[in-house]
Every structure is written in C-alpha cells, then in structure tokens.
Image (cartoon, rainbow, N blue to C red; front, side):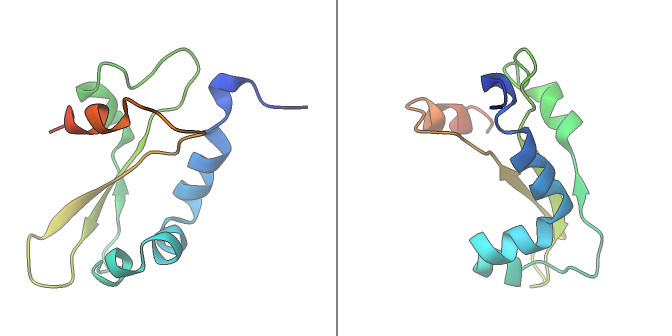
Length: 100
C-alpha cells in the first residue's frame, strides 16, 4: 500500500534524523568533514516552522534544519537545511532564496 502523497517524505525525514552523520557523510562528504561530530548537533525544525509560512501544509512534515559545530575555527555553528523532494519543483530555488 502506497503512502498518501502528503506523507511521502516522512520516512526519508525520519531516516535523516536518525542517521544524520551517515547521511551527511554519504551525500555531502566535504561538508561532513567540516563538522565537529564530537559536539552534539541539534535539529531546529520547530524554529524553521516559525519562520516559514509554508512549512506545514496538511499532514506534510517540514524540512529538516540542523545546527552543527564547525571544526575549522570559523563560525562556531552553521545550519544545515535538508529538504527531501519527491520530484522536480520549479519553485524550489525561489523557496530557498526566500529563507534568507
């Protein structure tokens, strides 16, 4: 049985949450290498929902936002924004730009 369309991304977001360091290592090895994994990272999904008008639509789960520590002496923390998409979204670039 297929998941309802609005719930398609939930399993992916659970996987990213549970296996975040492994996710980063596999998909973004250079970024993974720049993170100090000895310092706990924090997911800030609720904070993201507060600043995004479209963060929750129906039963959709919002994007993942993680605060991670850098290991290169730069800013102490940076934010990693992960958005799982089922397919091409012509408005994607504009939505990401609107977060700035």
